[in-house]
Image: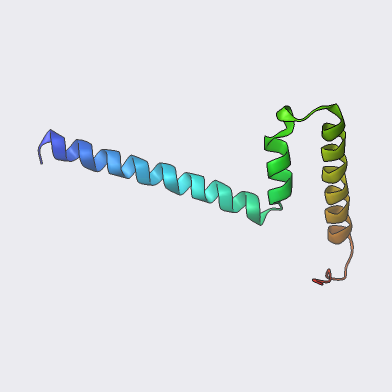
Length: 80
């Protein structure tokens, strides 16, 4: 193998590894309770004014309380 082929294979492997790591992280976040609403609100938090920030904080707290209640109760949640 010449050095050009080796460099191309090495670059392809590195790109594959980076994509694989990002997919694993994304799936892990979704699997362990990361909700899309919370993620979107957190990513745009800096662009919001004072009143909207308070509303976002309240929404996130309500979602966290519901999640805690579901985890602490023995009965499964209703998917209605």
